[in-house]
Image (tube, rainbow, N blue to C red; front, side, top):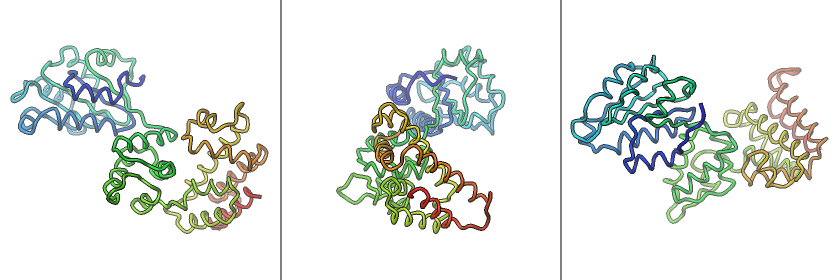
Length: 338
């Protein structure tokens, strides 16, 4: 199904202004926005006394669609409308039967369906009717390259500032789980020293446990600048802290960087802006490709990709066994830098 015609911001604005639809179908791989919208409807549309009588919350695995429809057909008691929320709707059997309700949705009910980790088949007739009678909102999971911009916008929305390096640290360590990222940023906000509003690498290191000096971003910086001592210190730290920095996570990030570097060598315009546009990455990271291209030509980059593949295979026991991570790392770093 195509992505939503309405953004999260516009949808929430409409709800806040009481421009309500009879049915909201919230779906997608990213649960963060689904939860935000359904929570606002659950806790903000009705006051506490109204919620006692005119709020019904059901869960997909514990109910059926007939029960949901019957609840939606009831009349409100203490407010102009009632709210019926079906959470975890992906676990509800025969959800297609919602079409019977869509033919005559109750004008005094706001029905919210939370369908996580998947989407509906847009070719079905009842889904088209759902779009006509209500609001269908899709919340897709963000890609890795979209996270820096999302983190920056989220921090700005909290009236905070954040260092570029801190953005990359959060992106690399927390991935694309928006709820997890938002939760960690909120924690950082609470732990900020008085009189400050900036999230720094030091603040992240102190409160989340991400090392500002020993991470993949710093390793790449060492390789780009050919800082042998720094590179070896970092991989030694990785080898000594395997749980926090497993090789199975480090090598793919190195391979991804040098794969992009290979492509960068053949871009018509070799600038940071061109790299940011081509690879859909944060401009702060894009600058590294300009620097790296000066240290590693196309032929050397091809060899480096081969070294990383070989190291990955050997770390999994292919062609070698019993070799410690620190030795594999040191050998890889030597081959890259020389």
